[in-house]
Image (cartoon, rainbow, N blue to C red):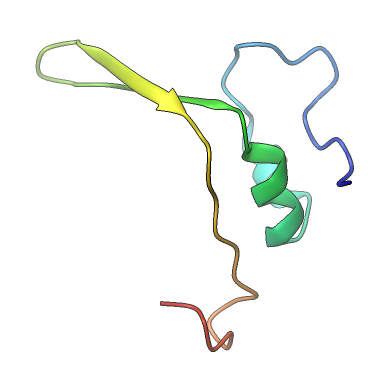
Length: 67
């Protein structure tokens, strides 16, 4: 089980930059599972999104699996 990386009281708000800087890539990937990603089209204003159901994590540019 991974540690809870989500900020206390977080619910439905944009995650701050600090969230992405606090942990190794594997822990961060696990923490993002189940989160909802939304994007707004700048031209139409339409919002679309989905739930994150899969993540990939790499140990940096020297990781042989990194592409």
